[in-house]
Length: 118
Length: 118
DNA sequence: TTGACGGGTAGGAAAATTCCTACGTATCAT
DNA sequence: ATGATACGTAGGAATTTTCCTACCCGTCAA
Image (cartoon, rainbow over all chains, first blue to last red; front, top):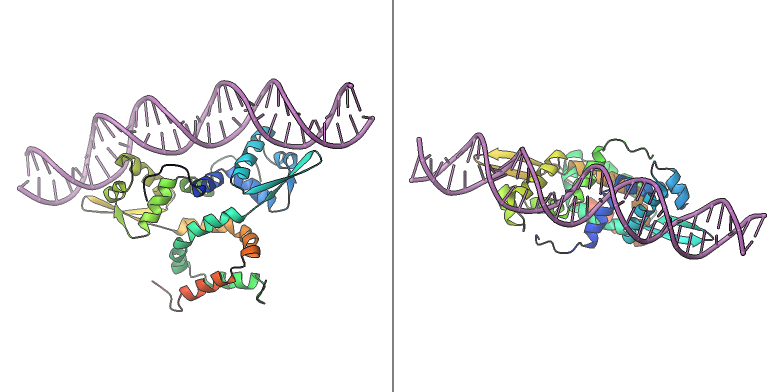
């Protein structure tokens, strides 16, 4: 699959995640929604620059904003990250083979609640 | 965690994966080791450019080369990708919640066989 | 040994990224 | 209405990325 013409959604997804500030923003939002100002205060960077990072994250649908009053609350929207998981999955067997973390899988099961239906 | 000074291994990892050609090279190598020429032939790009992509992948330890005769065989080395998986894991619960793919985890267990080492 | 093949590196052009300082606009308090 | 607050966008400078064409050296066949 060579012949790269236009940038695919996957390209834009990995492109968005390539920037450490943007990954940090996502990690920050794991703790709950935040306003732009709140986010910007966490970074050693001018607010408009944070705004642009947020735009990239918005364009890839990795965050969603909701305007309330004069604030915009940003929240993580993880679904596009399935694209990363999907890309990653053919490689998992490589480290599974040598790290043999079956225990990890079991952790996943346990963490899932064990019971059964969601 | 703002204050970004130097680029961390994770930064370089995501940086390496940001380029679609590099992801395609990795995907190609999933089919087995290849020489530089074999790889270059698959892409609409001059060979030295492919060489540089290979250097980035080498620097992040995502591929390894072995010289045999006058050929260099490149093979995928997936271990650093654990870094991606680790970064991703806090987000998994978001799509797990709505896609409820417990069956996926069970697939993993089944696919792992019971045996073990490759 | 000579020539062809395999593949890395150098230097540079073009394009994309990242960050900044201004500035515009909408919302809230007075 | 007026001013302060919250945030986006514009335009541009400094880097970084990505790709190219030379050019280099090592290996194999004749």
